[in-house]
Amino acid sequence: MEADNTKKGDMYFELMASMMCADYRNLEKEVRELDEGGIDSFHIDIMDGRYVGNFAMSLNDLKCIRSLTDKPLDVHLMVEHPLNTIDLFINALRPGDTIYIHPEAEYHPSTTLQKIINAGIIPAIAINPGTSVGTVFEMLQIVDKVLVMSVNPGNAGQMFMPYVSSKYERLLAIKKEMHFDIYWDGACSSDKIKTFAPKGVKGFVLGTTLLFGQKSPYKETIKMIREMNF
Image (cartoon, rainbow, N blue to C red; front, side, top):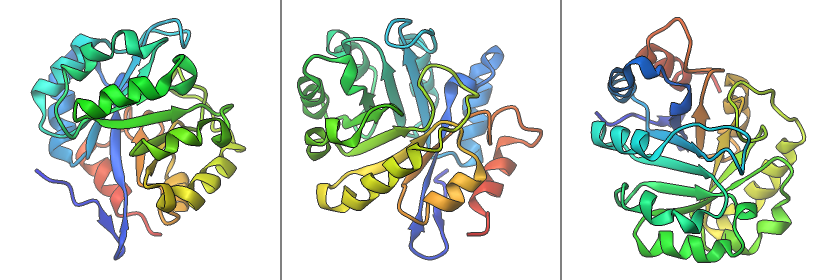
């Protein structure tokens, strides 16, 4: 079932489920209910315990979710030197899926991004709260997506860092010229969507703040988000 992710005329935003927050007692049920509930894509956080001080999802989790849905996967690699293992992730994905890397995690991030491009996967970078736009400016010319972290990567349930708002504003000012889309990750509450979707942020990763651990079924929660007043 294709989700209706248009709202109020021309405004458009995607909703992505942060699967590290899912109930792993029944992952298949979680994926099915999110898919049927109208989620646009599944956000897969891969952590190696080195780039961030946590272990999260694995390659096998990714393969399982990929087998359960036809929706796109957004694979967020929070790993050191992703070039060393990038083929493992590329081979588990389909054209139309996305791989985000952190530029700080690689000696030559453009080489890793080129491998992603050559494989027909959507190339993307993730920017930490402490990473300036200037340090990744050249890479903005070769990626299709930029995932802006509004919290430090590695754990769910963190507090929003207000100074990141100005980073969104800088990226929004240049995204049309450089042909990339902007996505929000971390502490995504309804007020953040109301503020930044109209400005041009294309998608929002939903975790424990809005989607998981709520009393309502996923379908009702997703419908509520889409029907918010802007």
